[in-house]
Image 1 (spheres, rainbow, N blue to C red):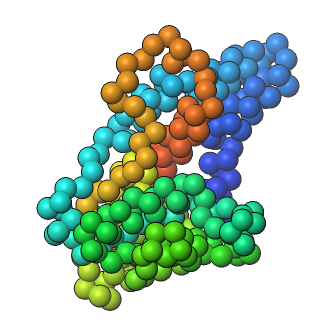
Image 2 (image 1 turned 135 degrees about the horizontal axis):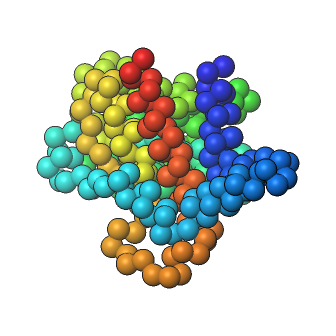
Amino acid sequence: MLFWAKKGVALLVLPPLGPLLLILLGLLRRARGRKLVWLGLACAWFFSAPVTVGWMLAPLEALPSPTTEQLAESQAIVILAGGQRRHAPEFGGPTVNAVSLERLRYGARLARQSGLPVLVSGGPVRDDRRPEAELMAEALSDDFGLAARWREIESRDTAENARNSAALLAADGIRQIVLVTHAAHMARARSSFEASGLTVVPAPTVWLGDPAGVPDALDLLPTPRAAYAGWFAAHEWLGRIAYTLRAHR
């Protein structure tokens, strides 16, 4: 119940629905709702313009790639699920989505470089779906020629990824891991895994921002790519706030 409550709040607050609800509420109030309409429009622009989205992403993605020495000191690679694609007739059924595939690609590269065993983590978001870790293990084997030693198939969010993965790894005496996830998600994921007693070497992938880029006038205009990155950044900031509030109960 708590999981779906969190999902519902996120849906209502995050773009695109959050700004649209502000605009709708303002329109329903007619003349008295003009400020809400403008606020909704401002939010819609803020979460879809490259210049503002880059500002949101910068502190989330400020993590380097792992060094050769860090890989040598670690005992396993953990790759977090990012979702699944249910309609995939070319693969004969459900498979990993683009987010999961991006993480698998980098995790597979690290596994080949280091020789470390791999854990894939992700359960079914809904009861009628296969665990995402199973789909990840299949893609890892079929597309990258690597076998996952562990499959964590129960988790539905990052905190559960961490707790369940730590329990699986503890059975084999593993305490230090290389954690693979999107760069913007890494800070929250790392915190969760460290709270579960693991030593974490961050292995971020897919930077959605461009810290080396110099903004220009065109970056004030909303773009589809920035809108996606803006949703991702807003989701992470909301998640960090929720985890902070939970930790201070």
